[in-house]
Structures are given as C-alpha cells and as structure tokens.
Length: 93
Image (cartoon, rainbow, N blue to C red; front, side, top):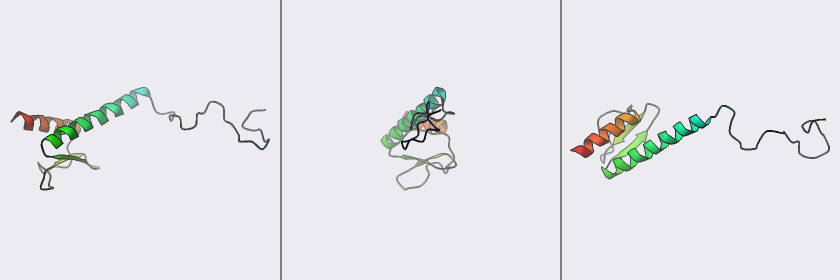
C-alpha cells in the first residue's frame, strides 16, 4: 500500500515531492538568466541614481525618469540594453 493511500489518521505523505520545492519547469539556466537580468537592472538603477534619474518598469518596458517626474527621452518602452547604453553615453559627456 502506498503512503498516499494510507488512512491511519496521519498526514498523507507524497514521496519524492519537497514542499516549497522548485516547479518542474524551472531549470538552472532559467534561474541564472533571471539572476543576470536582476543584477543588470540593479546596476542600471545605481547608475541612474548617480545621474539624478530613476529607472521605472511597466508592461511596455523601461523608462528613465528625471527630477521633473517626466520621461527623459519621451519613451517608456526602452529595453534594459537601451537604458544601459543611454546611461553610458550620458556619463561620457
């Protein structure tokens, strides 16, 4: 008799499933890509803060917000790569 079908008043146990464990579709590669993206975003946020700007994210993409609370270049659909290159160009001036 399997432990799932046992009815002795205790909590049924499912062998092989770890509570709170990773979903089956998650992979190490996906986790590494997500971490890289998060680290790139944090670096861009630090660089933007140093320049007196703010990075915001929406359903459309990223935007750089100035001190006047308006988008720096009128766009709110920039990719993270575009944000990084824009900040790099702004630092070079």
